[in-house]
Amino acid sequence: MNQRSPSPYLNPYLAGVGLGLVLLAAFVIVGRGLGASGAFSSTLSWLVNLVAPAHAQANEYLSEYIGDGSSHPLKAWLVFEVVGVAAGALFSGILAGRARLTIEKGPHVSTAVRLLCAFAGGGLMAFGAHLARGCTSGQALTGGALLNVGSWAFMIMVFVGGYAVAWFMRWQWR
Image (cartoon, rainbow, N blue to C red; front, side, top):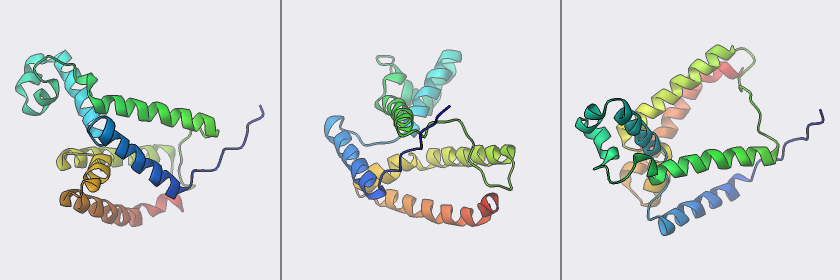
């Protein structure tokens, strides 16, 4: 099978300008910024409401996403955004010749350890997003664009934490 070589990645400065324009368009067209964690909260509240409606309605956090029943939780803007981001990423990966099932890992780490570390890191990020009342994209992009002091402090701490943990996790890539 003849497989073409993947296209080079987009220039990061050009990608940053593009992301800024997407954020501006979101503010102008939808009246909201970008984010992702709200989509997962909407989906979770919908699933809990399917299984245990009394519990979902009594839970202050979940009932906020369910609302009064006049609209469906999956009709939230962020749900459509996350589905669009996933579809766009897949489409872009296919066009660039980069879409394939693989697990990126260093030479001295097993696939199981790599997946365990990835899922643990994802879980910590999800927990942190819940505590911070927003994910990295919502806090850093949207909050940063609105010059929210808390969002800027959050982003600084993301970089500090990332660099600190990277030092301890570098063994995976050596």
